[in-house]
Length: 73
Image 1 (spheres, rainbow, N blue to C red):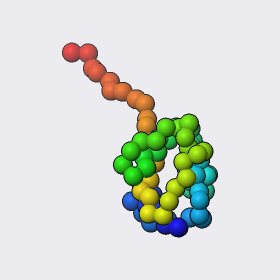
Image 2 (cartoon, one colour; image 1 turned 135 degrees about the vertical axis):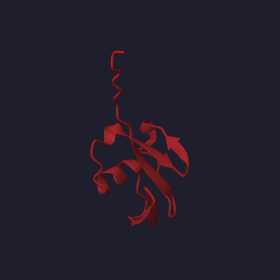
Image 3 (cartoon, one colour; image 1 turned 60 degrees about the vertical axis):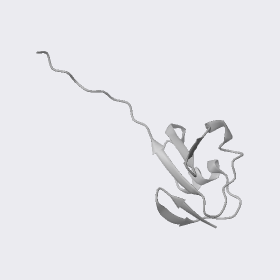
Image 4 (cartoon, helix red, strand yellow; image 1 turned 90 degrees about the horizontal axis):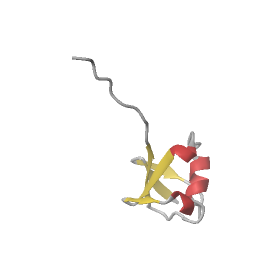
């Protein structure tokens, strides 16, 4: 089946879960990735049970911490 992952067509096996997709795509630090499926964020505790379908659109989103420095005026 074909998925759209971060805007690119990717061929994967049938009946793959989000957790399996993270492994197949060799996503670094999967515990730090949020997954959007067809426009909606899915909960991490459903990654194992959410099975993807042909044509699904997936976005892997990495959130980074940080801040800005303010100079003393």
